Length: 236
Ligand SMILES: N[C@@H](CCC(=O)N[C@@H](CS)C(=O)NCC(=O)O)C(=O)O
Image 1 (tube, rainbow, N blue to C red):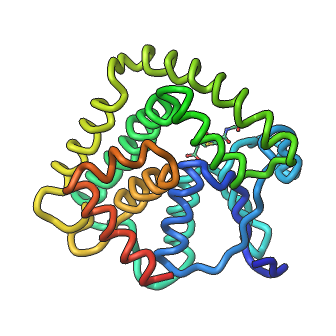
Image 2 (image 1 turned 90 degrees about the vertical axis):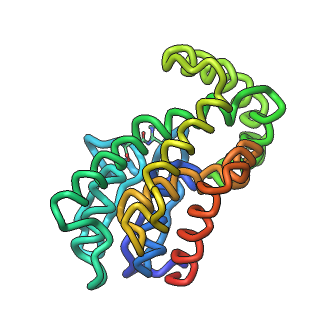
């Protein structure tokens, strides 16, 4: 879509934080346009003087909202009549805690797994460079150099987080999430709340990568993932 009067999401297609926002946009059926940002020169977000990360949301009235969770909350406050985010104090407390877990633990668990070896890293970069804004030459050079660099970065990141085995660590994260769901369909009960959509969006960001198989291998987490997917698709 490229209509001038639509709000804009400045993104990297495969960024987990952008995918959090897109999960809410899809679930709430909010029409919007995406602007893929060039990750090297970031010229598309030059207008944003102090904030240089994605996602950035620019509404039709020009209002700019930065950072995935504030964007999700802004969208929930301003679009659609049914609220996604919890309003009840106790539910809100749990939702906030799981939103923080999603950003600080789950997101950080992914790179050590996505880039666990050169073969998986090349496949991940194949997808990243195809989805992202890269020239033909960049696609080819970044695919291999990026995979090599990220394999080393991911090893360092795993070490600094005390992750000995990235696969076991993600499996533990998924178990933690499955436990949080208990016997409910969603963390939000009978419908997804903000944390459901955040965790779903983050996992969705690696759907086309080899590491996604570890999510498919956890029946409870994967059933939940598919339930949210169904709700998001139904709503879309
Ligand atoms: N807290 C931010 C984190 C956003 C973030 O770190 N985005 C990354 C992409 S995944 C980014 O833009 N990094 C800066 C860069 O690419 O130079 C959020 O939740 O939106």
